[in-house]
Each structure stands twice: as structure tokens, then as C-alpha cells.
Length: 259
Image (cartoon, rainbow, N blue to C red; front, side):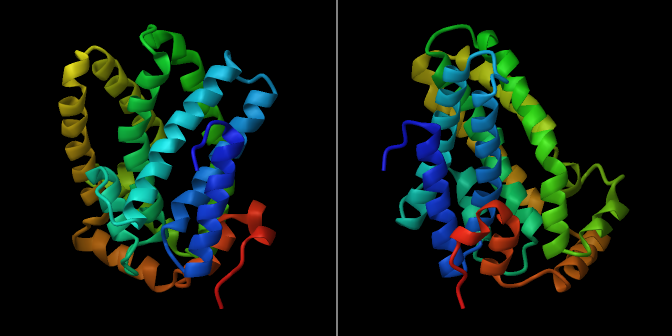
């Protein structure tokens, strides 16, 4: 399927979620989070929340298509970016926290894909023209934060223990911030758009390697942090289909849970 509208994106995400729930696949965790954001962006466009709703829909489609393409390649055993590869690889491991799965997806999608999508949507026009609507997404994400945290708290009741490590500036798991990631994505877009077209691929490949390494640091814990993650995981829900359903409350009735 070739997605050309935000409704196409929503349908594709729903298909992934349903497929992952039926297959008990952790690949569905990030898709549930992404669906919430996409639905909120659609509502924001409809309510005139953005400076240019048509351009925002195009950005949403171009941006989301990078995730959908990565997912399709991975499930078809084709190579994808290393940033997405680590997120998909970790989905095979039962020892990784639900939060870590979500952060790995956000790491690849925001830190790599978003800057690329922003440059593509500009089509030679100044990147600054997109700035206001780009920043408006932060407002949407902030509005979803409490809902997502509540749902995470259901499936991972001891997740608040990570607060014991709040001062650990060396832990990517603790310090990962969507706001900071989006700021970094904007800086990456500014650098990318300044490159000569023939240098794009090499510049993106370098960025991909950096983001892959950041993904590694999200799951590579040590010392007291590793012990805390183990304890949180001990009490976390284990069945992916049940977790997907809880994280996707809005679509609960549309998901067939594997028995």
C-alpha cells in the first residue's frame, strides 16, 4: 500500500497493530504509540491548529512512511537503517522493558527520520517556513504524555523506580527526552538541507550510525540501573498482545488478542 493521506497512515498503523497483537509481537508497541500521535495530528489539522494544515499532512505522511517502510523491510527480511534495525532486533527479546521498546522506536524515528522528512517536505524552500508547525507537534505530544504514562503504569507497575536514577546523566534510558530529540532532529534537518544533494546519502549514513549507537545505550544498562530494570521487568506484564491492547485503549475493540 502506498500511503498518500493521513487516513492512509492511520489505516496502515491499525493494520500493523492488529497483526502484531494476533502474532504476540512486540513490534506492535511502538505502532500503538505512533497511532495516538497521528490521530492527534489529524485532529489538530482539522481544528486549524497548524499554520499550514495541508503541508502538515504531507509532513505526517512523508515522516510516517519512513517508519512503515522500515517495518515492511524488516518483516520482509530486507535491510533497513541501522537505527531501526536495533529497535526491531530488540523486539525479539523478552528482557527489554516496554518503555525501552518505545524509546528505541522514538530514537530511530525522531532522531533520524524526522529531519529527513522535514527536508523532503520543504522541496527547496527555506526550512524556517516549517518551524512553527514543527514546534506545534510538541504541544500535541505534551497533551498525550499523561495518557501514555497512565497506560505504561498499568503494564509496568514498578516503572516509577526509574526515578531513583533521575540524576544519572550518563544513562540514555533516563535522559531520553522527546523535546530534546525533536530539537536535535531540527538541527539535523538544518545541517542536512545545507549539504549538496550528492552528499545527502553519506551525511544520513553518518547520522544513522550515531543514532544506532544511542539506541544501544538505551538498552545497555549496568550496575544499580541494571538491577532496577530487572526488578521493573519482573513485575511487568509479559504477554505482548495484552500489552498492545492496554497501550491502544482507543482501538481496543478493533484488536483481536491472541489466545
